[in-house]
Amino acid sequence: MSMRIVGIVLALVMSWFALPGEASAKVWRDVIYDHMPGVGEGNFTMDIYAPDNAKKAPVVIMVHGGAWVTGNKQFSIGPDQAHFFNEQGFIYIAINYRLAPDHAFPAPVQDTASAISFVHKEIRKYGGDPNAIFLLGHSSGAHTVALVSIDPKYLAAYGLGVDVIKGTVPLDGAAYNLVRTAGKKDKLPRFYYPEFGKDPKVWKRASPTLRVRDDVPVPPMLLLYVDRPVSPRRAKELADTLVAHGHFAQAVEAKPRSHKSLNRRLGSKGDKYGPMIVEFYRGQLH
Image (cartoon, rainbow, N blue to C red):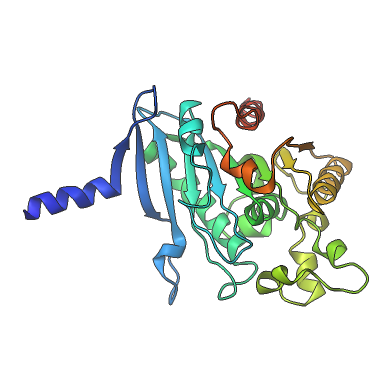
């Protein structure tokens, strides 16, 4: 009986799952990428999904949404995403990170940088290419992947430059310029406060659009947005700012998706935005 229990535990650590109509792939669950005194290790875990027999495969790191206060690496991502990217030859990684209000900005960005550093060091063990790392993030996760790609200090803390990221796709974020969203009255929508507080200086540091510089490289960025308040304007503004500073960026409306369905349907049958993202990523593999 004890050996059977051991076998079950091992199966949870590294299991095989079937891709419909395709060969099987491997998944390693709850891989710990960081440690912090007094913080549960569940905050620093990732699930790694790899195509069977992966060798030097490009890697997608997904940062889930949830308004910085909720969500996780299993239930806040589209159900077809891992399957889709594996089918396209990519390793797909979904991460957990610290959440507000207990862990406010810049915790999610710091944790994402830590996860990138771990992947860069360790991904060869899982069949991945450390020189082909891409980012994907939805909603609040879109803000996180944009900021870690633009502000070099987060990856610099791990001895890395932003050039370790080969391409970034934020999915329908609206927090790219918190200062502009707050307006002349310096008042943000209420749901921003658990993460960013009430200090405009913090809002400025947390705004990807306001962190863009000419002299710091930024990975190519494809910003997808949907028809809803604020998001289109902020995505276009960030893309225009990046281009004005000599970087490559494009903002594309994802019709007829909603904020939720852009994430939930990504990579599902008939979805055109998963293939668009893969084409964008592959275009950076020169």
